[in-house]
Amino acid sequence: MIWCAKIQHAACIAIALLFLARQCGFAQSTTTKDRSEVETLRKERRETQEMLRSLQTQIEQYEQALRTIAEKERLSLKALETIEKQLSLYRAVLKGLEKNQEKLRREIELTQRELLQAEKELAKMKEDFARYAVGIYKFGVQRNEEVLFSAASLNQAIVRLEYIKRFEQAGKLKILDITAKKRQVAMLYDTLSEKYQENRQTLDEKLRQAAAFERRKKERETLLCELQKNKKKLKEELEQRQAKAKTLQAEINRLLALEEKAIEAERARAKEAEKRQREKKVAEVAPHSAAAAGDGIPPLSGEVKRFEDYRGRLPWPVRSGVIVRAFGENVNRTLKIVTFNNGVDISVEKGAEVFAVAPGKVTQVSYLPTFGNIVIIRHADGFITVYANLKDVRVAKGELVGARQAIGRVQPSENGNAIVHFEVWQGKEKHNPELWLAKN
Image (cartoon, rainbow, N blue to C red):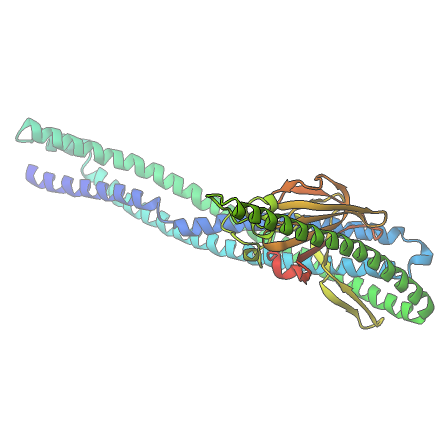
């Protein structure tokens, strides 16, 4: 009888140890990979939501500008440009909402998977605990004493006592484990419910923004038709706009010409210095040209060794913005207007900070009454970046700057919002900034 009890009690102890093993396995049931992906998705969605908040602020600023435009100016290029920039922002908002919803759908999928796994584990825990309870009922405290006192030696009794303690401890731990698992299941249900609700809200917001976008498109079409009727007024406004654009570009070209002369002068000085060093037969010759050394330009950050390596991943000169006027020819086929842009125009919130996109040296700072401050920064490998429409400037000519260092704030435009004009040059060759900037 004692021998039989020993075997049966040992079987229950084996079940208890199995409980402990499963408890350890439970902590790893939800894969680290899934958890990591959820955290990444949440971080990306927070960033997207911050961008959407900024875009919505800009849309409202344009809306305010449209409300304050004088009646006689409602049929004007100014009003048309305001509406077209607002439409660009609406497109970005709709794209951002779609991106947000895709990430939310993936979060829901991962949460559902985690919930299903947790429910399976809870069911298995309950099943195992039922077996444990039967063992307790059949081989309770009295049987424990029988097995303990029937030990052949003190050492064997100590070993059996340890097993009995583990058996009882496994039961207590399993109760706590089941309770914790129930809480986890309940929390996952709540999380899933919140995500479903957020998904519905995102869908509603998409529908609202799409409706606003369509209304603005119709207003734009009506305005275009009206502008076409008054060709004389349209021509006058167009000439004024083009004259302003030429003024800005002429100033930038003047600064770029000064920059080119400065680079040539530095190269000449560097060659002269090298010549003197060779004549004096200096032991350590340090080849030193302005283009190679960057004239004291700080090294590029991270893994980037050359400015060329930034192509396609250059940081934006603003935290959150949308390109509303692209590089190169911009054609309005309805009004038969063709304009050329040496850079890109980025719509941002009023008062937004403007940043240097890479380490470099501030080599030119200028000011135009209509266009605000213009800053030119020289980088490694002969690359130059231009920043225009700045309200104030926080850097001085000759100052070294780092990537993402604030160089000033944007100046509000007459269209109710704020536009940063940004250009990329290498020597006398202009580049399309969109090919350099990271995907926003």
